[in-house]
Image (cartoon, rainbow, N blue to C red; front, side, top):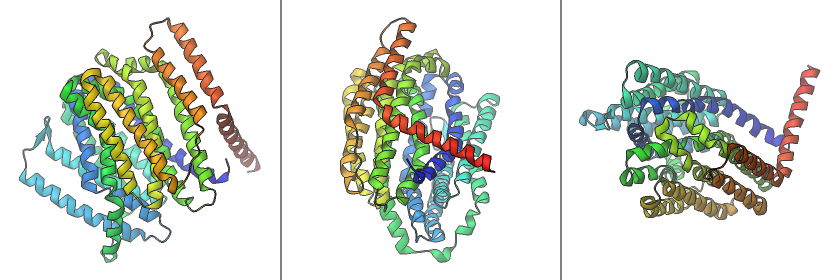
Length: 476
């Protein structure tokens, strides 16, 4: 591990400070929500949020991803890229306003359509502006925007849910207003309007951007299918109560998703910058190895504490959600691996492959879910999600070989995975807590031994960095 990884590490740390700090509050709010809402209400809330997440890529045409990639080009014109993308945005906003005027009384589970549209518009503009400022290197502003949004969301939650007792509509009103405040801050702080000039309208550029972004729409929809379609199947076969319990079981795995997402922001920048390097395969393989180690160690550490986490996070009504977390943790790991390999499509600008591989995983997820959820319940939903992400990763591993090649140490990976499965099964065995803890400790030790070489390299890397920082301070 050399100096060229320092920028990756630095950017990851910056994103971590803001993103984990901001999104972590959402995790800490879970006990608050499980006491404000019962499982039926939480299931409705989750379905509305899931539906909004479905609409975003359809409405934005994934132009945020195109803004990031084309702004990162060495010869890219920042003003031209942002201006051409925003022309589409302004037309879309006008169309949504017309829809609101025509359909004033649209309501979704007692939530006004005005709120839904406001959230969509706010999220659309935030996504695109944040992709832009990340590409031009304003990482600190990116992070501060996230922090401001979550602080405002927390304050509005207290006002609307606690003081005014507004229930589900209060939650979405808090979400809409927090996005608006964050958006205003970002626009003012980065002087966004200075990058928008209509003389830069370029029909050829917008076509290139759309050719890049449009294949990402079905790709993103398939990711939505993988992550969220189970909620609809569960609601249909098992009811909103089960949807609420399943949503809570996803919260702990979502912490790993969050942590990987922090890294992914920095990883995409690094991958694009290193895409023409002679040793890129070695660099990418090293980074993937440490990603794999992160997930293996994290899951092994989390498994013994699942029941305690759920006791703290949720009311008794949600306690059974711990049973589905182990499978969802594996699903999260395979999801992260798929995203890692998916960077190959971003590097090459050949995003069609992202769609086909996501399609395979999505179809498997839906088919398996429909077949086994009626019989296995929430276990079936968890399994279908895990299988779908595993299939997607395997397809992407094969397909992205033309962009880069990553050698995987299969023996150590499968051995580690086997131990994690044993740890998961232990949770369902009724034994004294002392013996259970001892077995988990022994199994975790085995995981460390199996992965001792890369763990040693990581330790030595950070030790060297600490010593170097100490030497620099002494010289100063």
